[in-house]
Image (cartoon, rainbow, N blue to C red):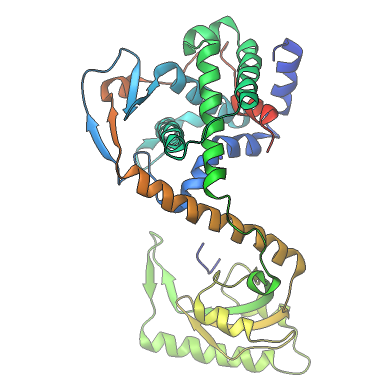
Length: 372
């Protein structure tokens, strides 16, 4: 590719478990909801704009404190255990042996859980700034969801996670309030996007590269002489493409050095020179040679307007605007906050290793009660 690119009965519990593998993507999307919301904010596990102080004086089970709000061990264990079992239900327990550059997947999940809970609690503080609160009905929904989730737990799960129904109610209420303040902040964003702004076109292209990769995957730029040869090759292919009986798809197969021949995209998605040339083509027209950092391209326009892709791009544009508006508010707010991390307690936390602990429905149940 050449461009840049979150109930109670035993019967009900079994039903959820059978559906879990197929619903993994949706369930993890719920877990990572805030990651998506804040992706444009550059928010790591601990915000770079936030003062971090490692201190003593924590309560026995207090993991971190952000201003007046705390995260306790049982809350963290709910997030960690549900994430752990979501992964294991799809990939099996062997997945935890995997690591990247010395960082285990377990540590990655821990860090993600810390980031998500910290963000949710920060957004609850932000809700206070805007005087956003849950309605009585929403508070009752949080209680009902907590009752459903808590009743789905067996005694071992309750004991090892250290949770009570009250703890679960608090987690659901905080999650719902975080969602509500997000919706409040982005409330004035216009969801109407014109066809012209979101217009998506479809093109085919032939790429003659001007770089190579060494044994480690590092990029090596062509010499000037090699670039001249690549340009000559691109000119020869362009001549073939413009012949009356030319089959562009066959030329792609024979000459292109990209692993994909067809792209659908909107404005701002591609490198500027490629995009400008493509958007100036009519249906069926072929460009001159276009240079990008990847090499020399010969572009053929397949359609100047893709209805389905344009509609999908409208959704993407609105979501990007929401993230941008929320990100600006969030980043400004977190600059004033101090976070205190109980480092010793945090480092001691590990996944639960007990076959009786299978709970993975925490976010599924939230979604059932707080339907989007």
